[in-house]
Amino acid sequence: MKNIWIVTWFTLKEAMARKVFIFFFILSLLAIIITGLIFLLSSSVDINAFGMKNMPYDNPVTMIEMMIISPLTSLCLLLAIFSTASFVPIMLEKGNIDLLLSKPVSRDQLLWGKFFGGILVVLLNIAFLVIGVWLIISIKFSSWNFAFLNIIITVVFTFAVLYSLMILFGVLTKSSTPGMMVTYFVFIILSPLLFAAKDKFYGMIASSLVKTIIDIFYYIIPKTSELLGTITNDLVSGKSIENYQPILTSLAFLILTMGISISVFRKKDF
Amino acid sequence: MSLNVIETSGLTKVYSSSFGKRTVEALTELNLHVSDGMIFGLLGPNGAGKTTLIKLLLGITFPTRGSAKILGEDINKYGFKNKIGYLPENHKYPPYLTGGNVLQFFGKLSGMEGAELDKKIDEMLQLVQLSKWKKTKVKNYSKGMMQRLGLAQAMMNNPELIFLDEPTDGVDPIGRKEIRDILIELKNQGKTIFLNSHLLSEVELITDRVGILNKGKLLREGTVKELTEKKEEYKVAIEGDSIYSLPQEFIQKINLQKMENDYYSFKVDSTQELNNTLDVLRNNGIIIKEIVQQKNTLEEMFISLIKEAEKEKVQ
Ligand SMILES: Nc1ncnc2c1ncn2[C@@H]1O[C@H](COP(=O)(O)OP(=O)(O)OP(=O)(O)O)[C@@H](O)[C@H]1O
Ligand SMILES: [Mg+2]
Image (cartoon, rainbow over all chains, first blue to last red):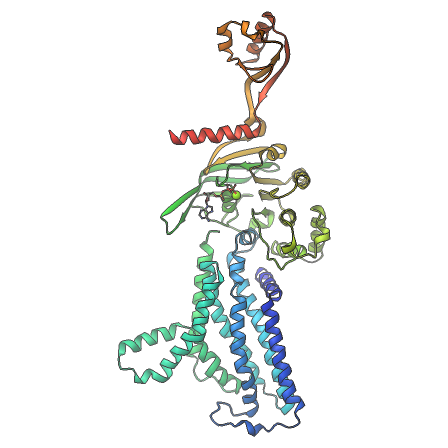
């Protein structure tokens, strides 16, 4: 356990030394400042002016919070993928990995350390952003919607699932580009596309073969669009989760990819 | 009592590349024993398999066949690793770390912490003369400084056994002398040092035993003295060229040959024959100015050994 923590801690240090982390942080700070300027300086904001039609939230405060945070979390995830893609490849560089493996640390611990390190980096950033915005809105409207903070969990979980995919590609290829490309593809294209196919067009498809293919892909690929969509909406409104399937299948994906990464890493020659 | 800190039996490594089409046998059936408290030098040309051996012993690469033990423990375990230090060839540290950070990180991974760790970091930086550079990022270090930092890193956890892969690579002559002194000091503290090198003149100065590796095979193993002595070959310096007045059969018997200037070489089988030979020379009126036993440098021995091995391959 201690070894994992040491690797995690130094991974965080690595992130801090990168420009991307600062950029991430400045972006979050900027978002908080702008939110502050809009809501704290303007004397009165009419909540009802935002229009609650077609919104999945009962509480207008939740809606305002989500309107600010939603686009930012997607941007944050894009940045997070970019800034953590090289964690494992850098560790596996010749000369560095030799030294790490000569220490009384197991290969599993090294990989888990990198896993938690990446997650910690994203957790800190997202928590900073979300809590900052939440404080401002809550103060302004004197309405403390603690359930909104759940978005930290869903975003970090979504990231963890995507990060496990990058770790796998990192271990297999020792470089960051393939993993990053595959992850962007899953996050930006595949997951939303499969969700739309399953949710909207499924009924229109006649061929049962096509349906089966869609099903297979749908259940295998991590469901990032649902995790950030319906699941997050349920949680931030304080409702109970309607459908656990996206969480469970994504979690299974995470466990499976980490399992493969570890078993490949255990046998790898350097 | 001396204990084997490194023991390998039938250790073999075959690397396969491009989907197993091309294979390289980097190490073949190696049986090596290194006992404690000595400096062992592993010599060999580029690609001989020196680095591969260290990597196998440290679990960085896995053996194709055979087994090995370090400090009595099987190399598959990783527990023994808090008693060893390692300086890899071309070692690399995350560039954002300072020299102090590097020692802190690897010290922590070796199980050190708190005040003990801080004290050790300063002590080690002092030893390799990098104290002034503690807070400088390693990306700004020169090659020699990196090598010193690597050495400090390898000694951080007060290891019993230290593996050094080309430790003086890129270090200036003064720095090399300093590194040699450090290694001798470590040996005096009872530690075992396993050294990979192709700087033979340097190895000669400090190692107790050497092994010579070529194309994955151990050609020779022994003390430097054992490997470099040419038992019965002598060199004499005489005045004039009166040597040619000697009987032809005598010249042939001792294989007398002219070297440079007044020097000639000859071979004898025993001390008795040496004295007999000198008597013959003196009796023929030859004035002997000097006589020395011939010795190979490690380098000469190394080159002739490798050449011999190449010849055998061809046949
Ligand atoms: N990861 C690898 N994959 C394939 N072949 C390898 C690998 N590592 C080493 N080899 C091959 O194994 C052989 C031995 O290499 P090794 O690095 O052990 O040599 P060395 O004695 O340390 O050489 P040098 O003095 O140049 O450092 C070489 O032929 C090398 O090409
Ligand atoms: Mg080498």
